Every structure is written in structure tokens, then in C-alpha cells.
Length: 295
Image 1 (cartoon, helix red, strand yellow):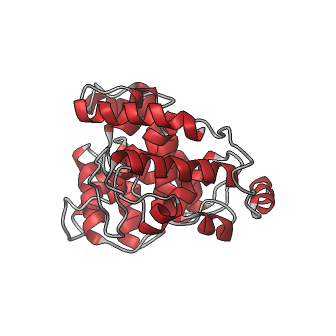
Image 2 (image 1 turned 90 degrees about the horizontal axis):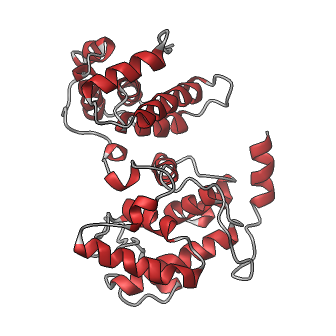
């Protein structure tokens, strides 16, 4: 079993600060903490064993530059634990860690073949999601196009009783403020509405910024009411659908969804959000979810 070396947190902090002195020390510590949580989830130490959650935590820590997490995530990909085996992504992660002087990663890199640039999608850096707390930084921008989009969200969000910082954090993750974004699953526009969701909330043109933002805000308002203000469940529902949240009695065990929730919560840190109970009846799964969390 791989385990943390003695004084790991201090060593990791020192290593990262030397490599990238501009990194906020709080982010370095957060990366170290995430790696500790991931190790616990991977091995079932004091928490239920959960390889998928471990992968999501490792990936966020690795994205923040933690070399131990980069190595650990590479090991998960090399061995198909919590994710499908992918030697290319394993090699890319081992390369990152090895470049920081990680000896075990360098040894593994010599044994694994594949594209050394093929990093997992969850490693993509979005500056909007790694700064500060609360998401206030998303409310301003020097870019004229992005500034207009932010102003639209700030103007429209109160009509839907949605904190604009939550909406902007979702938008940054979904489309990176690209009004013409389109995914392979046909999700479209700023809030990446799939056709079914667009129809559900009366969006006729998903590439129209105003219509798309209104549709995304309407869905967030509905999800907040359905999950009674629980932000994690709301975000999971936005990514995977409320049906998946109900089915799994919590955030679904999908790597993409767990990484998505964690990424946005790294900016919008509030665990709960005000909601309007008149919008819809609450999820019938909430009682089971609450019991599951207490276990």
C-alpha cells in the first residue's frame, strides 16, 4: 500500500513553493489536504473505501500542482483503479510528478508507455476556479465580452433567486464563458443546456446568451428547490441529472460528476443556498440521503 511519507505536508509545501513561488500558500496546503483525503478514500482509512472519490480528490490536488497526488493519480490510471486503465494518462501524470523530483514517479515513467501529454480532462486549469473564496472574483473581468456576460448574469440572477456567483461558477466550468460552446452530447451555449433541458425551460435558441442564461438559472432554481438548497446535490443534478442523484441517494459515483461538484465548490464554498419551496416538491430521496450521510 502506498502511504504518505513522514512530514509529507511540510515536504510537499516546500517542494511546490520552490517550483512555483507565485502559488498561494493556502492553495499549496489545500492541495496537500486533498491528497490526504484521497489516500484515505482510496484505502478506506477512517472513511468508506471509495476509489472514484479518491480519483476526483487526487485530480483536484494534482491540478493544483501536488506531485504526490500526480503520482498517486498516475498509479490509479496505470492500474485501472477507480477509472478505466489508461497508460497514456498515467505516463503524463508520472511525467509531471517526475519533473518535480518525485523518484517513484520517475521509476514508473520508465515502465509505462503512452502519450506523455495526455492528461485527464479534470486536470485542465480554469483560472476562475482556483482563486480566492466565495467566487467574488467571478463577478469582475477586464475582458469586454466576458464583462457583458457577467453583467447579464448579475442582472438576471436575482429574478431566479440564484446567487450570481454560483451561476458564474457553473458557467465557468461548463463553457468557460463561450456562448458558442457545444459538447459531443449536444449541450450548448454558456450554461451548456442539452436539448431536453432547453425545451423544459422554454429556451428556443441555446446559443443566444440571454435565453441560455435564463434557462440555466431556471434549472438551478428548480434544482435548489428540489434538493432544498443543498449545493452539492444541486450541482450533481445539473451535471448528471436529478434522476441520477435520486437513484444513488447522493452525488452519483461518476468521476466526472464528483470532480465537477468539487471544482465548483472550490469557488462557491457555501454548502447551502436559499430556495423557494413553491417551485417544486422536494426530492423523495432527501430523507434517505440524510440517513446515508449520518452513517
